[in-house]
Length: 235
Image (cartoon, rainbow, N blue to C red):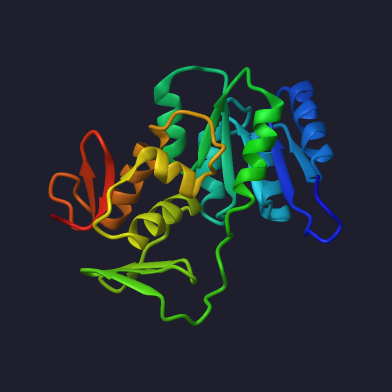
């Protein structure tokens, strides 16, 4: 439960199943969050623009605009944490959801307690800072990672990353040449208590590489160590 000294956090719950959305909202409200509801894709985009939520719980199957399109549009103006809900067990749905900017997913039916725990975990992660002056800039060839400012450039050009993509890059660049397993990256980026498919890391790493123009076959920045995990730096 949030204490009076902690800032209020806003969670937007988007699901066309109104009964389910209401139950989820009640659990989140009891955990101390301000909860907003939307039941269609267009409503979700409008509410996200108006309210600037910290977290969006986003169903994949929505009328008007589906969850994937909502995610794409929200990512043009917000770096809030997006947790995708899907009623399908199809791995393709989950991968597509992550590739358009969702940070994580849950497959229905899910435990409301697990959902609330996931929200609590991500809210412990920092939001994008407002360009502080800092000397903590890590260089890898033409890649520059400014950890406190949460800025990334390649060849002097800014690179727009989701919060999860940046946090993965930050974790890897903090320990160059050290191989980090999927589990270590999850514990660093998500939370030590996170429960789910560890291969979610692979999808975010693939998205990150694409944005950095980093070829996995001939990596300049992120190297895959097969059977173990990932390492920042070549060789």
